[in-house]
Amino acid sequence: MARYILAIDQGTTGSTVALMDARGRLRAAVNHEFPQLYPQPGWVEHRPGDIWASVQKGLRDIFRKGIARPRDIAAIGITNQRETALLWDRDTGEPLNNAIVWQCRRTTDFCESLRDAGHEPLVRRRAGLVLDPYFSASKFRWLLHNTRGIKGALRAGRVAAGTVDTFLIWRLTGGMAHVTDVSNASRTSLMNLQRCAWDGDLCKLFEVPRDILPQIAPSSGVFGVTRGVKGLPDGIPIAGVAGDQQSALFGQACFGVGDAKCTFGTGSFILMNTGDKPRASKSGLLTTLAWQLGESAKPVYALEGGAFVCGAAVQWLRDGLRMIKRAPDIEALAGEVTDSGGVEFVPALTGLGAPHWAPEARGTLTGLTRGTGRAHIARATLDAMALQNADILRAMEKDLGKRMKPLRVDGGAAANNLLMQIQADVLGRKLIRPEVIETTVAGASYLAGLGVGLWSGPAEVQAIWRAEREFAVELSARRREERIAAWNRAVQRTLL
Image (cartoon, rainbow, N blue to C red; front, side, top):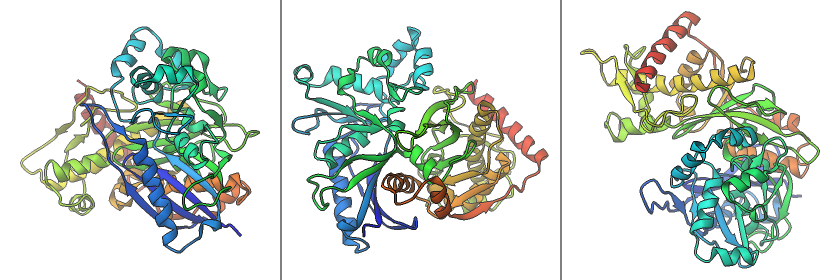
């Protein structure tokens, strides 16, 4: 009997293929990296063939581990780098150009022209997003304006557009399914959040024909079945799809209003479940669609905020200042002191993200004295990582009008116990770290398992989700407010 979920986590620098069993345990995972392309300053591209090749290698290697055979797979789940945009030929399946990656800034001038023309309120109201080259719509427009032979391909009806999930589904189904899920569609700036459908006015604004876009489907349910994929039998259902951050929210079993997760990576991404109605942010956050469990289910929405520099600040201490040899060394170094000794580090190394949205801001290191040592700067770095997240989470509470529940944490830096304790203290909320730290993979697996009836519903997923450790608040309310006030003063200096 098929009792395993095969999860594909297609990320910015590589693809992970993993196996989850029916008890919610991750049994095996393999990762393959692929090249990053930087054709001009500020431009980032991927070759779609490289993405697909990395997934194929993962499919080959996961079964070599001997945990499961291809015929043991009950369903496939997909989670993916969001906002990255691709075009390919419907007849041949061949890419028409390189993919434009979410990090790419080539459409900045176009987005600014739309903002100057007064179109941002429409995009905010319909799509829940700001006008920024981060999102897919302006990338699709660029590809449609700058791909050789595109006019003839459009006239012939041969152009297919999509985000990475759509491209993988197309390849896995042998070109039989051109579909995306609601969470990925919500990151394009082309989907109407209320109707979960492509918005004609937004498509017109960004000059993207609706007929090249995929069908929008719920995040859990059968998107298509495998056909002609080397190493996989035909007929395996692809039954769960979500963008990586929404997948992590689901993988953390954040099923209730006010449930939130923070992923500590190069930057930090925080999502909070806001229930079955989209919440317009008045605090500089994004409104996004989290997931939808079947056609008859109401969509679940979320507020999202991101800090551009989180783990990247530790990388800077390691590579730029050479204060540590390995990123994990920061925990022991920062632990040599009880506090930062008045040092404040605002890691605006690439500007400030939510809730400030100040791309022109630059990092500051203040409060230095003759007594300042490496340990104080290391401690100030961990403090900054936690304090900028606290700014975002308080903004979320303000928008939601509800106190946040304990924060669930994941990502590489979540293994840093000192950082997790600092985060609990400055937030004033308990932190919960899961047993399965690969939460994007877990979310895709849970969605796929629900899509084929391996689990009956979120309650059963909640029952198999397990915490590894909790971090209780140890800082007094008075000390917390003093610490936050000092941080706010440092941020204001950065914004001057």
